[in-house]
Length: 382
Ligand code: SF4
Image (tube, rainbow, N blue to C red; front, side):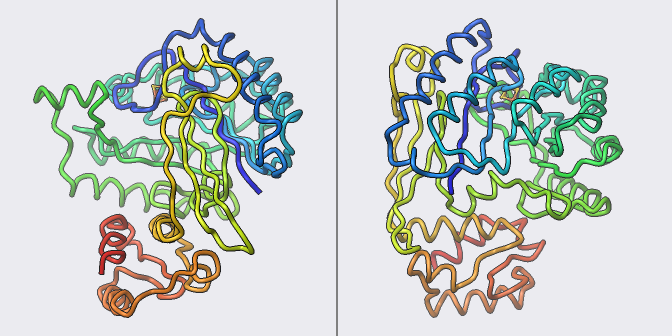
């Protein structure tokens, strides 16, 4: 079992917070589709061509800038090259690209999940984020989604913006919940150095909100969504029971995935008798020009080799961000990893402090999950 990720690196304009790889030269889309189809076909005789791929995720960038006919070509090339038994086929979309016709064409191409980048309904915040869509387009896109033949969808929301009040956030949540979303990904705004917001902060023109305000926002998101039956299952992800994202959940469980397109990441472990021996993670070139100029497989920009111990530690870190956590039996079976005596002691202490909800499987409490990264560092370094 494995996943496929395709990076579509085109956007109409640059959102002020975005650190993903994209270009705004959308006239390159036809060349990109030709090159992507060639890249897919070049993978025909690799070890992964025998694997069964159960999830396909088109992310970006803005995959909804592709025509439905482009998508059909891409899917046809994937079907010729790989064994696909798609349980989940997700396409990321922006609200300004949605029409009823387009949604029907995507459904015909096999798409069964859409990921809509709403971020906010507030006109001022949309302007601050430099989003290409308006508040009205956000509402219209969700109405179309809830009436479309595509069975499920998720919505992205950003909270913790400078100057954003809890009332503004509540208004975003109320407007979102009116469309009964099965899944929501909610992220606190992060200001990355290479972005427009990063430059504003560098010049002293922007102050990120204090941590306690961001924590209040996070709590409001969790409570409002839980009130609508949409439960947190990972730090940034919330779903109604049974609507959890399959593709992303596979990332956290070390299921192999192959990334295609510029700046796409791949992860391929070597597994023997259910034991992860080691793994390789790599990313393709982060620029469109060398990607379009290359032939066959996309040029690789970075490669990382992970030992069994590193894999075990990463699996623990990812699992502690989720409601499922991880059992000691799974760590032993797949990674030959057992807790040391000081780690067992630490787990007992954190259980007493209310940071851990369950010892085996090891699951953080809601309070603990807010500090998941630093708690994991503590656990792995005792
Ligand atoms: S649409 Fe998405 S990928 Fe494109 S700039 Fe905005 S956040 Fe980044």
